Image 1 (cartoon, rainbow, N blue to C red):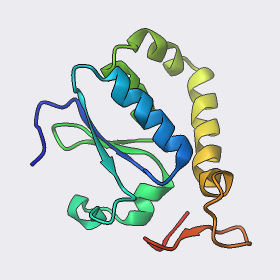
Image 2 (image 1 turned 90 degrees about the vertical axis):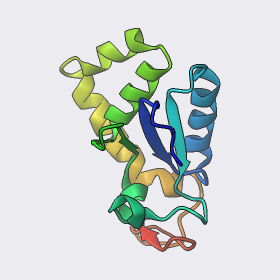
Image 3 (image 1 turned 90 degrees about the horizontal axis):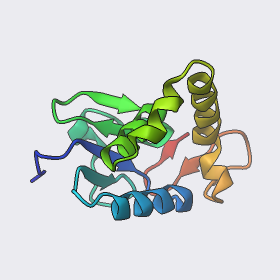
Image 4 (image 1 turned 135 degrees about the horizontal axis):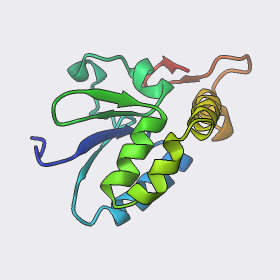
Length: 136
């Protein structure tokens, strides 16, 4: 059962070394247990429980707020770092220009992260993970 006092539930790819490093850092910083982390690479993870597909979770970072609202992409990172006490670091990321730049860079990373981490199964422009058969 999920703890209802979390500020957000963050869905991450635990098989992605870059993603896992970030989550480990956030877990260390989350001294007040404000974040529930859910590993979408776990064999027990069922995307359909959340009315989403595995492919949707693999395409970009997702988080769910206590009221059931979903946030994705860079906004998830803003919320994560705010939850661990780095609001001062987050506010500049909302400024015009910086916000658009971060969104652009995140979209590139999200699209390329499987090949960047050596997990791309295909030689063409598509990438798949065999355990979940999710294409990114």
